[in-house]
Amino acid sequence: MASYIHDLLDRLREGFRARAATGEAFVIGVAGGVAAGKTTFAEFLAASMRDWPEQPKAEIVSTDGFLLANRVLAERDLSYRKGFPESYDTEGLVRAVSALRAKRPTQIPVYSHVTYDVDREAGRTIAGADIAIIDGLHLRIAKNGPEGGRLIDRLLYLDADEADLEHWFRTRLFPLMVAGRNDPKSFYHQFRAMDDEAAHAFVSRVWEGINLPNLREHIVKDRDAADVIIRKVRDHSVSGLTVQPALQPR
Image (cartoon, rainbow, N blue to C red):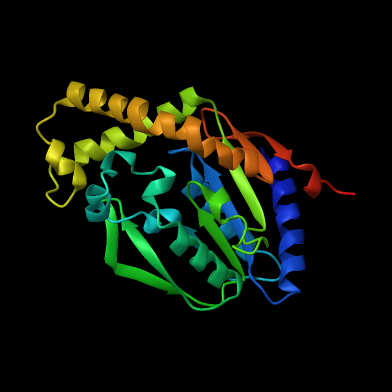
């Protein structure tokens, strides 16, 4: 794993130095299926980049904050399409990435994984980041700007077998449902009457009815658009990198 990651960081540093010469921020996208480890990987990248000799200011932005509010999803009959492309404020995401690229102060909405909704009172402002790491789904829609120029300099895709993605999703969601039984503020509190067997069945329905179709029909399109595909295995270790020809050394 170490050699793959070292190679990736070297490539990203080259891209950062080229972009820094223009006075703009270097923008990286970290895409992949639900529970693929995007946030953890984005945090790893940010920490590694802050240790570069240039000591860049690196910030992470989650696309979760650009989900439409639950109220809006309900009004549009999209509550069971949450996470699909149409459930996002795509225009708002593209505007935010454009502003981050230009190093303009950018208001970023924040998503609460307790209430399972956008928290309109918890937004944050990012200003002057040298590196912006965008973590989330459907990043191909923000890869290029309205006029065709690149907004995301390097789109990375965390790839894994469907069985591993399902395993990671199950091990994430079930504990949230259990914790929600005793937390009235939690979105999952409404499922408190479910015993463990019913909760596991609910997780299965969510995976098979929502996440798996989203993965197969939409999320994998980020893999097709990615500059670098990062292959992961069951223990979340990296087993290989596929670099698109445009990024191969000459």
